Length: 324
View 1: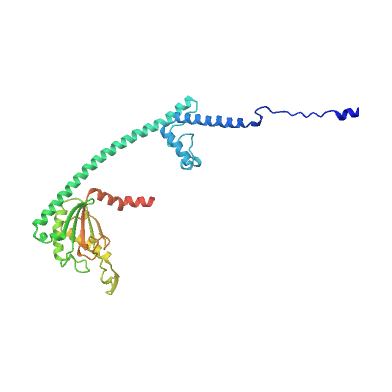
View 2: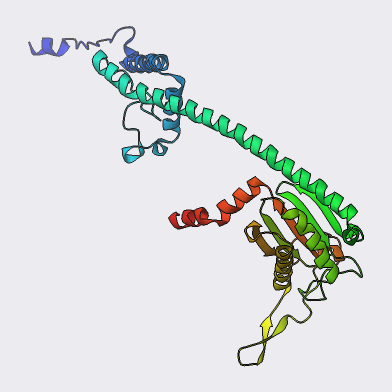
């Protein structure tokens, strides 16, 4: 018996997993990924089908910059409500109708307001255009009157080379230049020469006939004010030195021209601006000490320039600065 047991063969049984056993379950994962991708693709096609261009732009903007869309935490407060667009349908027809009514009606109202505003704007632009044309006609006519006055007036004709008239975007510009051996003012002073007074008085006769506001500016050349100060007598009869530069000189000369124009009949209400530019705006930039840089500029402002000045310098501008 013992011998027979020792001779009994040992059988080893191997179980094979079949012909495709080496693949395992990997195909299931790949198939699941494929199905997920197809579902996402068809979902994308569905979204493209039910949304309009504005909504698609909103979705695109959301994925580009989610924090840039207003809402709690920087996101939109609804699924596709971006920039006032409609809510995305959710299957409840009654609710969809309510949503449509609450979103479309304000849009229609806004559209009507836009049309009305555009219509008003068109009307205003037509009115503004008429006013600009009328304003331009007044200034063109004033230019011709001044040119004729210069030709007819004996006191102005000989100073013709020192006068330059033109139309600019700001209005009618009258420039009175210094000329070699014929300056408008005493050297380093705001005292007008007698012939400069005559020129300004003749110009005032024409300017007083229009309602337009006037801007007066003084200009010097780049030569430094010879002393850098002026002597001023105080209340105690003592002479004190006050700093004085081309800025003060140009402003004083502009004011001297203003006072002469007022004597010539220009109304106080017509004076809109009086400024001194020193040598910051040179006429002859190549030669900074050229006599032509020393000049008085008078601008008969057109309506647009006057409005811009009032908006920039007036109470509305001050209120805006305070609010900001």
